[in-house]
Length: 135
Image 1 (cartoon, rainbow, N blue to C red):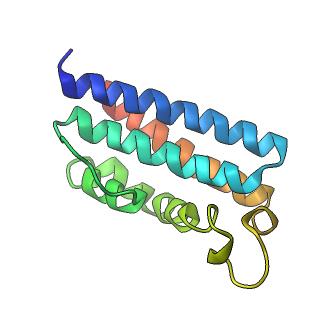
Image 2: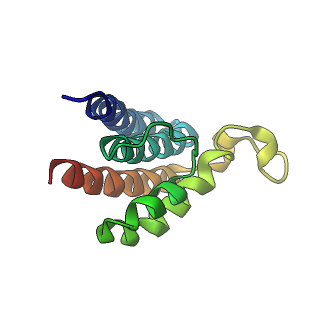
């Protein structure tokens, strides 16, 4: 297995683990954390796919940008743009209290529906990436 493929495998395994952690956080009531972990999951599996294709350093954290890059050669990823935008939208607001208008914290702002939606978006991205990596 070449170095890029090994790196891709490592990133993909962690991305899948992050998705499982998001589900666990949602079950335990940590909804903002579940949203953030879902974003991390999608980011990592998309980076895995790019590593598998020979990319060396991937600096962006934008799921939307990563999906767009992959969609140039894999048409199936174009349908994931709304999921990618949703996950980009929670990246900052789940982490920093001052990113939310008013006096709410991320833990007060995000609810179970938000977490389940983010987890669904990440799961769609993970499944599409898995099929592409194995195909």
